[in-house]
Length: 128
Image (spheres, helix red, strand yellow):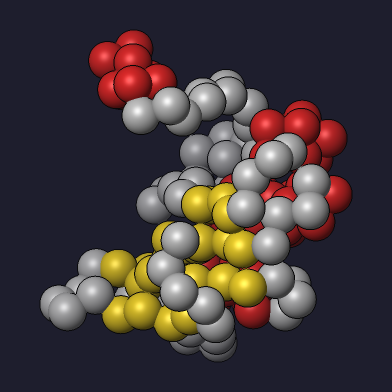
């Protein structure tokens, strides 16, 4: 995140944490006191250790685990419109698996599937 973007968020009274999605305890600490978490992490190609498995699937599980540790009740997930199982695209399948982790988390959730016009929205609660 750029310094200008961080400053704009701080002006909105948002706290900014520079944490990877692999450290559940640090994520839980950052989520502490929050009612909801927006999970927007994603990659569109695999490079080195940044794989769909690590980022989309394991990262989403870590966010859910941290949210539960921090007593967060709602999660917003940014996904992809064509995310679906068994389609032959590792990207689409991994985004679908991330959606399934959120759907089965027991938390209230909203999944925004983009791109699309109009944007597809799936929710079990009002938008955060």
